[in-house]
Each structure stands twice: as C-alpha cells, then as structure tokens.
Image 1 (cartoon, rainbow, N blue to C red):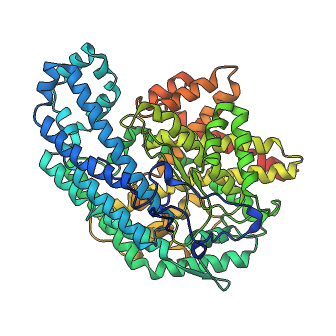
Image 2: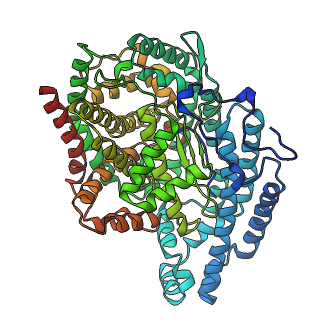
Image 3: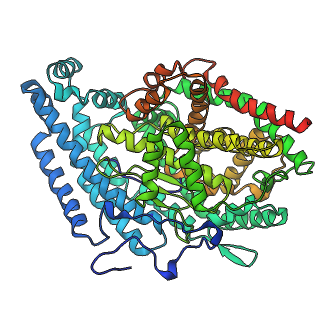
Length: 625
C-alpha cells in the first residue's frame, strides 16, 4: 500500500461537506481580467467529508485487508502450483483493495491540498493516512511473498494461464525490488512508522509553508503570490519581493533545516538497511531507470551549462541593461515582452487548440478537465502552492491543481499539467497496479503538451520582435526545466552526502545552494546572502528526494521525440498514444524503440539539448539584426 503525500509540486450544505469555498475563503486571485476561475468538484470521488460511502469504503478496506491476509499469507507458492488461475484471482483481489485505498487517499489528499490551513481538512487527511496505513500492514506480505516464489515456477504459471499472464508486466517489474526488500516484520515496521516519521515531516513542511505570510507593498501574500512578483516588470517590486521572501524563509530556517535533516537521515537509514549503494539508487529503482543513464544525463547538462544558461543569461543581462544580474532578475520580463494578463478562457482555448492541432483525441480528453470541473485554478490562502495533476484511481479520473495568475508561464503550466492528465487518463486502462508510469517517463506527456502549445503560439508571431520574445520565454522555461532541475539534483546530492557525516546547519545548506546556483547559472549573476535561504521552499526536496532529474529527463526526451514528430510522415500520433497507454507495463527502452530513440546511447542527451542550443542560436541571430 502506497500512502499518497500531497505537496507542491487540498460549507456545509445539508448533511455533506462539499469542496466549495465560502465567501470568507473566496479566491485570493482578485484580478477580474482573469475571468471565472474553476474550482474542482470532488464529488466524483465522494460527496463530502461526512459521506457515508467514504466511511463504508474505509471499513471495507480494513475488513478486506485482514481477510486477504488470513486467506493467502504463507501459501502463495502452493496456490500457484495448485492452479495458476487462483493466484491471478488473488492478484485481482489485491488490486481491487489497492484501488479502493487509492480512491480514499486521493480524496483526502485533494481536500487537504485545497486548504492545508484548515484544521478539519488536516485531521481528515491525517486520519485517512493512519487508518489506511494500518489496513495496508495486512497487505505487506503479498508482494514480499510473491517475490519469494521460484522464478521457474512463476514462468510456468504465466505460460499456462492467460489470467496470470495478464499481470506478467507487474510481476516482472515487482521482482526488480526483490534485492532490496527486507524480512516481512521489518517491512511492516517501516510501513507503520512512516506515519510518525516521514509522513509527519512532510505534513509539517506543507502546513508551515502554506501558513507563511509575506508582507509586500502593504499586502499580506501567500508564497505563490510572493514568488509571482519575481516576474514583475518593475525591478524595485522584484527586489522588495525577493528580500521579503528571503526574510520569511530565513526566519523559519530552523524548522526547514530540521525537516531536511530528519528526512535525509530517515532516507539514509532506509537505504542502508535495504542495501542501496548510491544515495539516489532508490529513486532510480522507483523510476525503473539505470544509474548510468541518469549519470549520463547529468554529465551532459552540466557540461552544457556554459553553452546554455551562461550564454543565454549573458544576453538577458544586456537586454535588461545590467552589467550583472541579481537573483530576482532571473525571471524578469524582457524589454520586448508585452506585459499582458491572459484570461482563463484564452488560456483554455490556446492549450486546447494546440492539442487539437496534434490530435482531436488529445483535445477531447483535455477538454473533459474544463467541462467536468476537474481543475482547481484560483490562488487561495492555505492552498497548496505550485501545480500538480493527480491521477487518483483508474475507476475515477485525474484532477489538476493550479495557482493561475494569468502569466504566460501559467498558460504553459496549464499545458504541462493537462499533458499529465491526458497521460493519466490513457494509462488508467492498465488498471490500478500497472497504470502508474515511472517519473522519468511521466514527464514526457506534460513536456510534450508544453511544446505543442509553444509551437502553436510561435507560429502566430507576426514579426521578429514577437518571435524573439516567444523564443526567449521558451528558452527560459527550458532552462528552468533542464538546467535548474539538474542543479537541484546536484544540490540534493551534496545535502544527502554531507548528512551522512552529521547534522547540517542552515549555513551549510545555504553554502551548498549558492554553490550549485553559481555553477549552473554562470557569471551573469551575483549571488549573495539574500538568496541563501531559497532552497527551503522547494517541496520536491521534501516529498520526493531526487525527483527533480525527471523533469530534465522528460524535457530532453521530448526534444528528441518532437524532432521525430516533425519529420514523421504518418503514424506518429498512434505510436505516441500507445506509449501513453502503456503506463508502467514497459521499460523506457521498449517505449522509445518505436520512435528510433535510445536513452542509453551516449549521444542521446546531446541531441535533446541541441534544441535548446538551436533556440539560443536563433536568439543571438535575431539580436544582431
């Protein structure tokens, strides 16, 4: 049983608590130019916090988990030898319980993400975690015992029974975990203590971050609104916002440092007991990607820093008329950009039109998110910052959370999260056990959705000034996705390596942060103490250690994939949808083979990075005109 954690990237009406917000908690996104921003309807999961169906499902999970353990624990191999179909039936029953648990935790997590400052929502989420962790302890034996079955016996069973063969991808994938699994009682201890350990620290981070207030220009702002001001056209506004962000993060650094130390130590203990050699190997295993492939990606991006970020930000400094940039200038609007607010309706049409240009089917699936209230877009105090697409369970549908403020980047974020959503809808056909895609490939559809949207917008440019502005914005987004995320990965490696030697101070963490930022962004910037606490707000470090390289993996992969699409005469769309439908049933090498791509080849990542280089080359050419 996997407990779902929600980070950055959850009024009573009659008898039921509904996920709507009262006038007192109305949207903090007050700009009327945005239009009506949608709030999600979680009724497709449960009618409300006190819905009888919710409590029935919780009790059902508890009872079925206990009965499942009594029926199957200790005799799975015998079940297989007697009749392979009986083992297939056991897996199907396990899948049904997992699906129902996933639905419960998805609902509780989305409620919590909608308002993490609401004590009732926090309790609801915490209670759900605790109950399902207890129920899940009765299921722990199943995957452990499956992996103890003799390989030959399992192959014979799969060969002789079609219903068991259906689960072959899951069984094969499951066996990759075998070398790192512990004895059942230890696994149960790790599982049950997660609520008072890792999950508790995750929750403390979420609630601390969502409760922070940033006083800027006489207004009290949430973290997402404060960070948004770093894109303001007025440099004085950016400077004031940057200073306040650092002040607030610094004043809470004791808490964030403690959380970071505790979670890094927790991970080190788990890795040591399981026998992982490298600090990131557990993430690589979860992603079903080889360490060598990730190392090649990191090396390729790191080698390209001078030709990518250093070169681009040197140009940007000239465009801004600065000898050297401060960190609050990194996302500053460019002089050639028009400072516009993009309404929600315009953003919706832009993304759906781009998707439709690729495939009507893609636009139809994405359109469901708008038509059926699967999106929560306004900024609110207490709402989880950032954005995410959560798949929930195959019997339901995904939900998307945004903090929409009408910036061009917000449109790209919408395109990104809807790409996830389309992927999750298609992969749901594989069922609860095989729908989940490894993080490295989970970013493929999202980044591809962004690229489609960008290309559609670029084609509308009427002159070189508009084209230059569009290209520059895209390059910045790609640098944020590739260079910045790899620098985050480098930072995490420094943190987890150093933590093995003892506790880290806020000063230690700040030094590491400034070191990787200086290396990755280059001499166009000067970084001082007013930037040293910014590591603290990034939720990926807390919720999913070493997750961040998946963004760079996905971006470089999509750059190569998009080149294949541009040169393909026919058939690309169906191959693409087949890849998304596969979910977690195939290794990345199998999924990329139909496109003639191989991530294990030394030159693969260089090809992916060449698209960014090409955009920067074009910008330099336009700059000379």
